[in-house]
Length: 245
Length: 394
Image 1: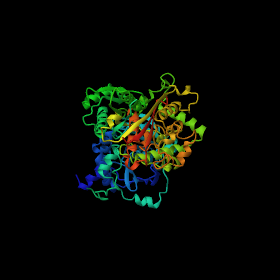
Image 2 (image 1 turned 90 degrees about the vertical axis):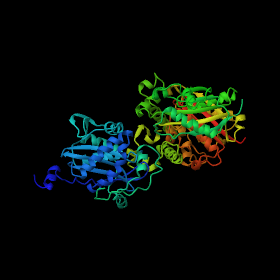
Image 3 (image 1 turned 180 degrees about the vertical axis):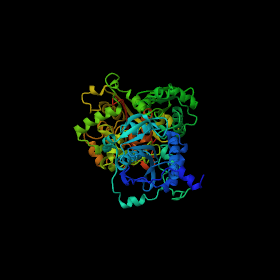
Image 4 (image 1 turned 135 degrees about the vertical axis):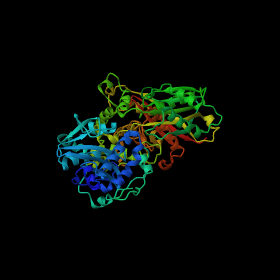
């Protein structure tokens, strides 16, 4: 056995920064602009902080999705998963949702999770679409393997696109049968499901540079479908960029 | 006939609830009883409006259960199921009992817990009110009926999607001022209609109706304490008189109507309510209409006589139905944004009007409101109850 650094090299998958997802802005039903951009590895601590309050929210399977996303984000930060990427949706810099996935090979993408924090505005739907856009249009893959862990996810992905069954392939998320979005299905669905404009105006980009979080109470109210009256202007994240808590 | 009116009003927050159906009904009932401050005056009867407990919650005889939970024995108890018009029908039952002298005080509670099942099951449950052989077996749903109705109405009267969007925006805006509303989410014309992203934000549900033209599936309960005038005289509470109730029916299957865009039951029920109240539509200050779909707010406002046929869209454009307009419609947020727990809706409409006429609607208060009108639209317009409420200083 050599040095600790040698062991770490054995534990890490080959490090590769994923190609850029060009940011875009989406007008939501509320008239607000949601900027969708790629999240850097050093922003993961802030995202973990955002996901943590959802770990015990049973409604709509937030707990299982949040727990898995938490581990995937951690694995991304600590170099324990290969070719993962994370996209975030930000409204005035406040985190509205997170999606992630990874590239399996040049032709195949693996969709991981979609978590919506700001509900009622199809944020999850927009972010999932952005994720598919990244796989097909920017990574140039032929297909994306997808599973749903909640009825809402099933309606949004399997039914709305609609996806094709690919039960013969094991998805990385576990035992549920895999479905697939092909390049052809993506482009057929694009006019009605994939939205957004580029380039993003500078002012919006600047506002989306730092990720701000809703208060934990406001997050719970949002995901539990309660009033959003308590939404504040966004709490400063406890975790500092580039540092763990 | 004795004078009858509302002396207590309350409702739960509408939305998605973890409470049981009975817990929701109890919460609203206790609120209304607290509001009425009846003291030692007994409750003679309890009428519960509910459409789907047997199917959605596996519970029947809800009124008996509510009497038991509230320890209101030996009050008479009955449950009224009349589709989405159950709420106003229950108020009518209480009104008849008191007006005839059979009872002095009746508690009316509308309650529904629809989120106990999936949206697909809830949609199927509501569709069961359609004609079983002519509509339901072919897969007709309420959004589908409303879509067909909207297409014909828009074609005939020049109504555009922008008018429907303006109704949705207004009702969402009103709901922002209503703590009991299901949806607290402002929307904009850009976000749901004119921006390229609106295609995704506001997808078609049953063309030409889109997501933001349709009410949500809600849980919730609303409650009224209804009393004879002489009982109200003993209370130091505001009195909202039930000045007139009208009810009318139409063909079960929509296609059997001579003119499917003519909401004849709304027209007749409204005429009867106005006649009983001795007023004209022009006397009304505030409306609560059954906007399960945006097109229905517009069509009902015309059928009830508030606007000439085909002119409500122009009135909406001019802002006449806004909270600060000439004739505010759905200050509560309507079914569109306040929510639509079907059995509770008709009662909730009258809770809102009671608050409006008592001057207790806070931020969404309609100025100087004295007379209110509610339209509770059952089936797809085949069983409608219209009610006129009037503030009365006693």
